[in-house]
Image (tube, rainbow, N blue to C red; front, side, top):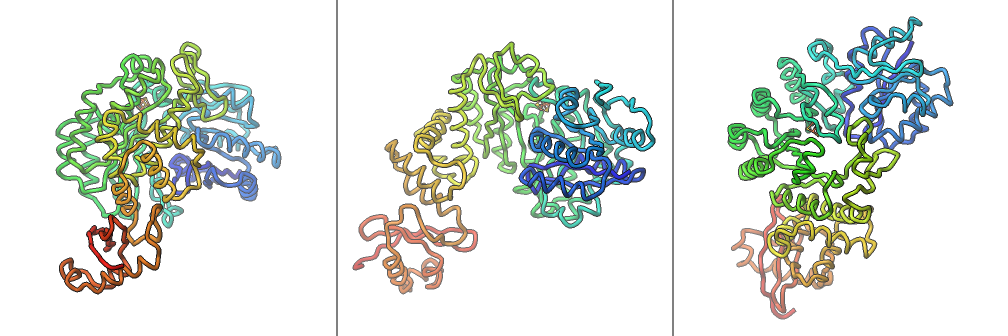
Length: 556
Ligand code: SF4
């Protein structure tokens, strides 16, 4: 029998490591292949393409980001070929198999890490044996077992990182890599809290494969380990390996628990890490102790803050700090404090997420206790709870849009630094809240805008607040370009005059000589802006640098 494995990735650059593991674990014994798509693709087309493969069995990996589209896919597949056997696996389905077996036209659900269980199931189907396999549910029989694969056995299989099929596309995609599975923590909103123990892949396997993907020219590796730095020795060895095997253009992302970072690890990284190589994602979620106790999240915020500061002082690692809105007991007022506590640490990115009540999590089971209401369809985002109203969450949503556009994008660096360092010092949430509300009240779009529009909106917002940061904002605007841009949102010079001015300046040999530039650079690579009556600002774009010079000119 022919089997095809599939999933829908969130973006084209993503690759599904799960499909590759299932494939390498079973390709010797079964006629099996895999094909992945993205959530943006047309479901009818995907269904037709999968049916054209002539497969008898289809295995589908289901996640929160693709569950709605996959339901549609499954319905279409069964309609068009009712005899096709459909197996589901993945985090979204593993804790509530009954729900999917009763609401989706599927045959089997695998709970947990399916690499070896899939083989048992395929064998039973192909040989018409009764399916009584631990970890496999059907309409006849539900298995509560969440399977864990033996990582030493997985490491003996052909590597999922070195597949011939991926050779070409590997360089352009984000590569997911895992050195361990499982998490020892108990965060009640997270599916990983339900897994037992942490298991590591053998070192030899990790280093051989990392060496391979680095040599193959992968640009970005995202480590899937739930808490990468759990084990000090393991962390050190992998970091050290990556540093010794550094290749220009490669970057690595890790999820780390900041209070577990040791001084010697931070010192080592600050000393040896090449620039733009590592990015740490640090989940802080809330700084309110009653909230952290309610969701069983153990953390020491002062220690996190101290470690984040040490990392920031080293200037080598990009930090991305996560917060979650809508956790138990966190009112709007208390959330604002969490936001300000985290924002104050000064990370390049602050990701503000909204609590999702994932299937299987304890928080979802205890939803009534905290007065939660959440959407029935994925992503099960909360609408309100006993401590925060829908209107308040809506406000936080608008602030989050503003945070993404004006802080996390990095396109307004100098302006944002001025605002958060002076006008809105210690009132960081207020800044994004006010920008978000301003944006919302004017019905500016959240999609389909140009960079120029964002500058115009922020400029208008600042004027409305009586804040004059025009020159800083303009410098930020130019900072987004390596070549002279065409226009400018508040350009006061007309084209003809600009040309005349640049021509005149290009004739000033003393000036050119003094700044080691030539006439061509002035005429072709320079933006000119009027500062006062006869005074102009020249912004000169030379390769990756920008030079700002003032110039006085009379008689034009
Ligand atoms: S949120 Fe992170 S630390 Fe907490 S259980 Fe999930 S993976 Fe583990």
